[in-house]
Image (cartoon, rainbow, N blue to C red):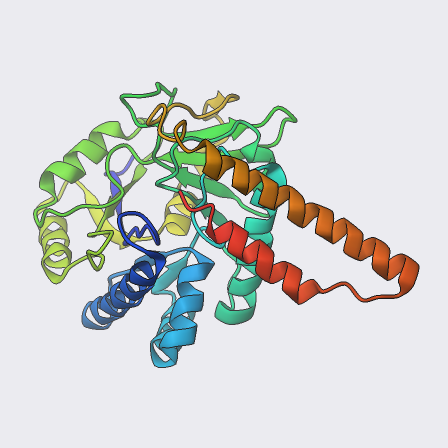
Length: 326
């Protein structure tokens, strides 16, 4: 086996709503994306990864020149679109139809506005993952899944990269980020060493995520320069700027014998949602109300020739999907 390859995944996780309102999250999404474009222009071998259709929609609406630059970088193979959903949703509470709508709406937007259809599902900050998700993800056109929670201290898995299987037998190649999906330090020596230690022996490649998230702007100039410096120093490693699709392509020939996990990926932050019963109840009522409205619209069209309000229904589903942010 040749020397290990460390795929340095430059990204910038952003909670659109957390300790701030969505308007501030929108402003930060634009600022972070501008920073990422600037770093890509400065460093020809740097790559950036970004998901969430809602983030792109905000940029397209508020800063068309920046959106055009991002499209140009996507076409150039420097800016990489993952996730294929409206937002990174909670992966436990929504019903199955909501996950399908996340993907239908997210991928539709990305096809029509970005010219791509993501093949990597990517929910690195979700607090747990229902056991039926491999069926939904694989049948919605995803080849692989990236997550982080539950972490190493919360759930033991047979490998970092594994096949995740649903009760119906559907499965999807899955990667668990061993430590952080973002970094605030400049020197990534220790981060790379920990990532290397988590790599399973049967695979020559591993992903190492870096960049300042949540009001951070993504990979900084100093971080990028540090990765370049380490790549020059570490003759025993192949340290490269990369993206998730490249990692999964690199390991494709070695995954047939990887272990299979056929269960939920739980638990993280136990009790985190238990005090939010009113929110959960309201969300479920909205889901069921939208499904009922669609059925009534179909019947009205069939029986009375009244066209279904498709755009209005899509807008309502988009709003509900946005409010499923993890």
